[in-house]
Structures are given as C-alpha cells and as structure tokens.
Amino acid sequence: STEPNINTAHLTMGPHTFFLSLSFPKIEQVKPYLPAMCEDVDAMEFRTDLLDCAKQPTTDRFEILYSHQWLRANCRSHAKRVPVLPMMLSGHVLEDVMPVVYTVRTLHQAGTWPDDEQGIQEMFDLLHLGLRSG
Image (cartoon, rainbow, N blue to C red; front, side, top):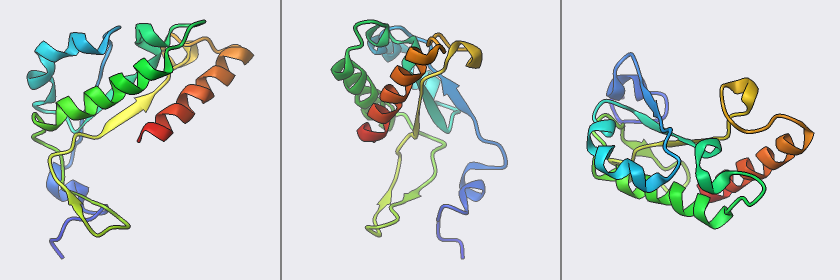
C-alpha cells in the first residue's frame, strides 16, 4: 500500500533524514532564522539544557513549556520535508507538522546539564515535563 503509515517514512522523506539542534538561549531568537532552518530538516531538536529559563536553581517550567509550544507552532508553516503523520488512535492524519525532539543533554552527552545525582534527578523532572507537553 502507498498510504502513509509509521513504517513508510522512508518513502515520503527519502533514504536520509535530518534534524537540526537548536542552540539558542532564548527561543524568540530563533524567529528570524526559522524559515531557512526548517527548509531541509525533518525534525527540530529542542535543547532544553541550553535555554536560559532552564538554568538551575530557578528552572522556569512555564517558560520551558511556552518555548516548546512556541517552536512547534512556528515551525508548522515552514515545514517542507515532513511526512504525513497518521494519528494512531483517532484515524486522523496530521500534515505539515514538524516533529520536535525534546532533549536535556548532560555534560557527558555534550550538553550543559549537570550529571551529578541532583542534576540527573532534575533532568528526569524536565524530561517528564517534556513528555507532558507533547
């Protein structure tokens, strides 16, 4: 079948896929570059550990959620290589949706988040926040 499903991404996106890792400390700084950045990528990596609002000890959870949703909403109109994504439970299809990969990288993962015991616990709290935000 030529109908899109999760196993046919290679047919709609080609044999190679690409993602762009954002490294801006404030999500609003992305705005002037967003059309060009979305041009040839299949997903955006939302680097939570690089955001000013995520810096310890005063992690601003609202600002992280706002930044994540802002990126998702603003990438939508610029998505070009994104496949048609079937909604598994509803039977609906999402078109022109840029997948956003929410990450928190530790120091040992080429990131900035502390990887001591407290840092790892706070990292999992941020990852849980990312899961909840969609």
